[in-house]
Length: 389
Image 1 (tube, rainbow, N blue to C red):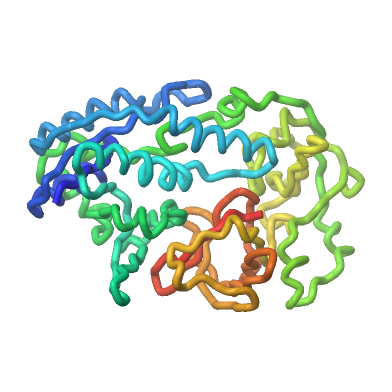
Image 2 (cartoon, one colour):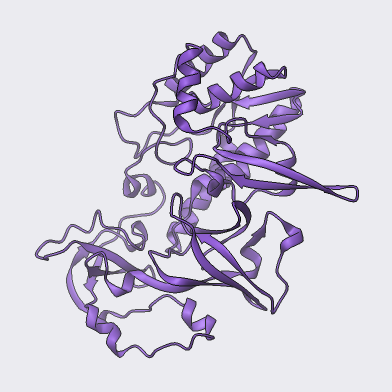
């Protein structure tokens, strides 16, 4: 089988290519350039040119063909423009999830097909399984064996069609094993640090990056005291709708303690960038109103405003990796859920209603953030996901 391996310059994709070649597959290494602009990127991080040079070195070491593809225009339209639009609405998107759905397992697959490849392989720490039902094959996206590196969350928006073209050669390995294999094969990136930051952009100063399209704008920072919630009415356990609604504040609910440069630059749970002193414990963002450009903060990492018992996903933003397990209106099921990468799985009940999906957690969750993805699992399999409202 001919397989295109997305060589990123990192050790994971390099070992993925090595393992596939050892298994007898016809391998071609492909490097994606997805971003040119360095506005807002932090100095001292490897540029895409460095990644490209190392990817070429890996291909030469493994003696496999190498291809370069520039997908930057599609990346800008499908990922970066979406990022700007979401931040402008006061939501916090996850560009890595979008990058996988829109670029790595869509545009990149088409480029690979053009070169005659049947499938695309990446260095993600996750696994694929499948089963036959009649004449139909159903693919199962399983968590990686290395629970500390499991990256299935980033693939939570993939479809059955995309999974049918995907290969994940290192999902059964632990990271130290991957490093060991790379060292044994003298791969040039065996000791290279893992990349960080936005997919294909790198580590950025987010406000500076966003100011390419979103203007800075002075606004009030208002502190909400912990006793504010003493006057909030309790919500019945079966009132999913009100349970999932984020706290809504007005400037009259607290005290102005400073200013900021734009509410759309902040996200729930954020600590950095508030830049207001005079408190015993750090301040955290508990809300941002982009209409009035007001930032709401609370003191301490256990401030009540940071916690919610439930979240909601609009019906048109629900995605089932396993369509055969999709809930019908009125149905409910207990699953494990995470709302961010590397968060330990949390027990929750999913309830489908006419308007969308409610996720009610066994324990209140810290930092539920609009625009991020909630992903639900059952016994290590990623079943579906949705954008948090």
